[in-house]
Structure formats: C-alpha cells, structure tokens
Length: 114
Length: 135
Image 1 (tube, rainbow over the protein chains, first blue to last red):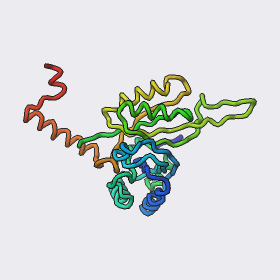
Image 2: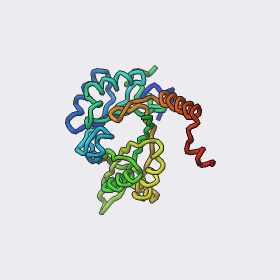
Image 3: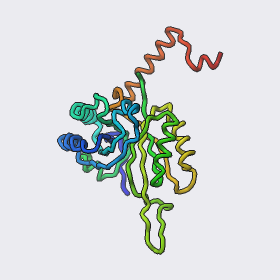
Image 4: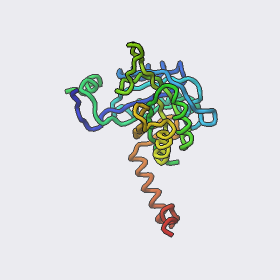
C-alpha cells in the first residue's frame, strides 16, 4: 500500500453525542466540506456524577469519526461547540487526534493530492 | 486548571468491555465510550463444523489525563488479561484538542502555561514533589 508521509496537515476528529443528535454534527461537517466521515453507535459508561466531567451522560451514544484538515480545526471545533452547545453540561464531546501519515487516496479526498 | 489528555483505545472480545471500564475507573478515569466491531486478526478466525464464526469485538475509548495513563493501561492489561494471545490490545493516542471537557488547549499553549507555572514556583520558592523527595 502506497503511503505518503507528510508533516501533520490532517487530523482525526471524534465527536461523541447522545443518540439522535449526530445529524447536526454531520450537517455542520458537510457544510464545511468534510466528506470523510464514519458514524458508529456506541454506549456511554459514565454515571451521572461523572457525566459532568465528560460532558455526556450514561445513555446510548453516537460516535462520529472524521478526517479534517489541520488548518480547518479551529473553525470546525468552534462551530461544533456553538451549534452543539458543548460548553453546556451533558451535551457531548469532541476531540482531535494527530495523524502522522495517510494513504494517497485519503489526501486525495481532502484535496491535498498532487 | 491545566490538563493534558490521552485517548486510550482498547479492543477486546465481546463481553469484556465491562472489565476494561472497571479497570479504567480504578485507575482514575471517569468512564468511557464503547462501540462494537468485528475482528479479523489471526487469532480471531474460528470455525465450528466448517461454519466460520464472525468474532465480535468491543472497542472502548477512554479519555484520561496523561499522568493517569500508565496506571490505567496497566490495570486494563491485568483485568482484561491482554497478555494472553487473542485477548485484545490496548494503545493510547495523544489528544490535540478537546471540547466538552473544560477548555480546549493546544500542546503549545500547555507548554507555555507549564513554563509560566515553573517560573512562578522558582520565583516564590514553592516546594515541589521532587524537592520534597530530595529532602
């Protein structure tokens, strides 16, 4: 498999919200031209006292995985925070993880391919 | 408050997630998120009377502060018996930014705050854990 080593220009985004609320996040990301998305059903394990810390509660969850451009990180996270109200308690969680390298097709989807 | 996070990812056989969550809590984490998956590893393919059984997996995402990570991972390995071949695996990823849990911060911002904190400690002669140990 051909891989293209690169300086970090892309990131892995994870959004965890209550089941049924992921559509909002999908729409936000689609509007920002983030097409590389996967959604999976999940289960939260936090109890109510813990929920405050994680920003979620112990119900069923939806987890969204996406690959985003590093330069869009700030805008994406700010928009997600505003629209999904992550600043409020028990609303959800979004985080970004670094990606060291990616396949050519991944970069192509994101518009980075040469 | 200044915090650095790591994402611990644990992949185990179906039904083992509770052990992982229990271990993470023991190690100081506040819980986690479980999603379901299918394994394709060399230890995963089993067949009964020629019928292939699809091995179901549980993937647990545990968010923890960096200092808690070694303890949590050690406890997960012990409780879920990850030293046994085919039992599962556990790894951690650094978190760049986080929303929904206090503030989101860049690693550079964290470094900057750490330096400022160190300067304050030196300037005010505040005893640290290391200096207490030396004494």
